[in-house]
Image 1 (cartoon, helix red, strand yellow):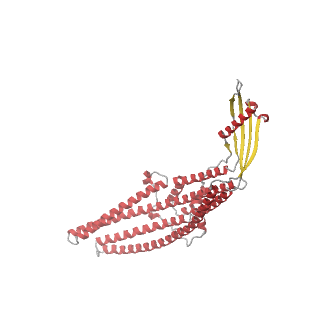
Image 2 (cartoon, helix red, strand yellow):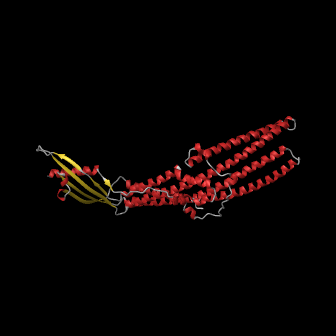
Length: 450
């Protein structure tokens, strides 16, 4: 019977190694609901553009963009890593069933044995070392959520900026076609005048060169629009083959003028995702330092074991055939080759890096917000001056038309004035769209808090 007990103890050890069911928390899948999305990107701000097409693209992008989906999956990954760390705070429980057939020396017959071991082990986290590391992983999960929020803001900003750039190129292409028509007429008139000996060949060549350059500029504009449409398709998770079907508002239908804020509150900086991430990383490294210090303290472990052993399976689950054990241990590593000291220094180094990054993020946030606000204000002033210049060109062109009708000036003079007017109109279109893009730039700099 002594041999049977020894054999059963060995089988218990084998079962512990081979079959283990740890206790762990089941995690819920991270879901970015509609309220969270609205808080991330401030849908109301996009509504103020009064453009249903743009708003539809924004919502579609938030639902389908692959970078956004990746950021959401990274939040889930961080949550599972946190659960893995939290599992170390929980007891481990295992159960097994080990049937065996054995033969004792000097006996001709063999006998069977069934062992059902149940064991539990637990590291008593008296000093809170494991808890500190779990809290550190909590911070990483929060950082992942801030990164997700930053991705939502960045992608929605990119969609808005590209959308308005495409509208700008639509209008510029339309104006460029008019410029090409005007330059073609200018060239034809100069060619005719040259044939009549009224102007030099050099003037005719220059007019032809201007006409060719206008066509080259049109090709560049079309190329830029194609490139932006391809990029836009990727952002909204559509095939670039469908880019000809992408709807957008006409430049002439843009009416909304968003107000320019006089100043930005410092509270905005404190709610930027990069600033919050830097702050969370600072807290996370602080917890890692505390846990590294606690590695120098002893660890306490509790072990419980009970095994039911019998030659008959249905009679094995009783106290008479059981082997039970309850014990504990206190372990203090005396020499680990300097690993604990190195780990503590490493965590302190990470903390110092986190401090510097935290300070830099704050300064960078101020710079980006100030740059965005300054750019918006100055570009708006530029747009107003360009618009004033365009109105003057319109008045001048009206007088030129009147002179042409009265026969005071030639058709060539009228076409040249028209070309100047169209060139100035291109500047107005560019500056007008830049105003909207700068608004989006400010929106991105303040993380949608506007």
